[in-house]
Image (cartoon, rainbow, N blue to C red; front, top):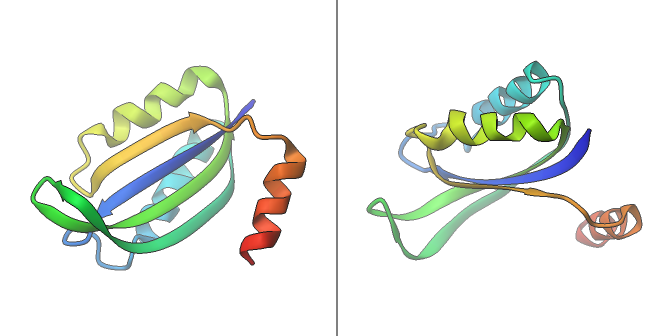
Length: 108
């Protein structure tokens, strides 16, 4: 399995609990695909530089997970039309393990 990182921007008007339910749903979806969620981090509310779908801000979530490369497309397909998601991006996490752990320590 390969390591990936996904960033989601959620619509403030469509999410009631700052995205906690969305986070649990995403974790269950990853596990259903045979993957493993290693980290789910709420990044809080942020204002946009420009409006996205007539919204001026959103709730940011960062997920790190391990999944087979073939199944990553299913994440994009599932959340492409979800009305709670304004934007999402999934990228391969190719950072060395040493760098990944040092970033976590610095943020704490």
